Length: 226
View (cartoon, rainbow, N blue to C red):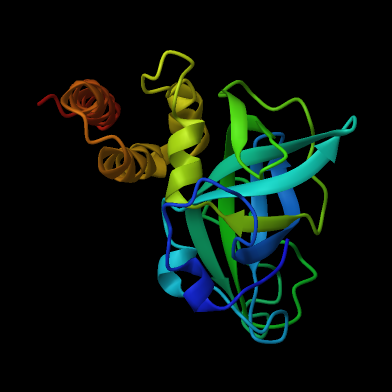
């Protein structure tokens, strides 16, 4: 995947994964579905992602060839963390207390890390589009230094389109569980993006139902019934 100038990314509606913006690379994982990505800076790439291109709720993908077939592993940024190695040399953490370690101990310069939750997979066609999206847990483990790229809106739409043309969101419970306290918030951001990609009234009604379910689950988790 090539890194391109900002003008090359003006059409975010493209349904192809070619020439997408590389935003970072994998540096560690917390489990099979939860990865830590170091966001590229000026020393890594000439074209670095802006705040809006690697922010909370941004869909991303990793392009890999597996058993001679090209796939994308889809994910979403659900948290970010700033690291200054000159402060707290014992190692920064995602949260206080007994929560899991978030940052790798070998970071030597100020950097931004992003937590990426995997959502599923899809196959890549010869034209660089995706097909046969699956929201099941990916079987494959990603590798350190795998490049993570910003997902265009058209690809995000294709990943959420079922074989019948309806909306496919089968990862929701898994994402809510993995992202913890931020699960409902990141799901709501994804739903808002899908509203723009699926303008048909029927799709909007489906998204309304899903949003109400997410908000209800969030309120129950907080012990507040609304």
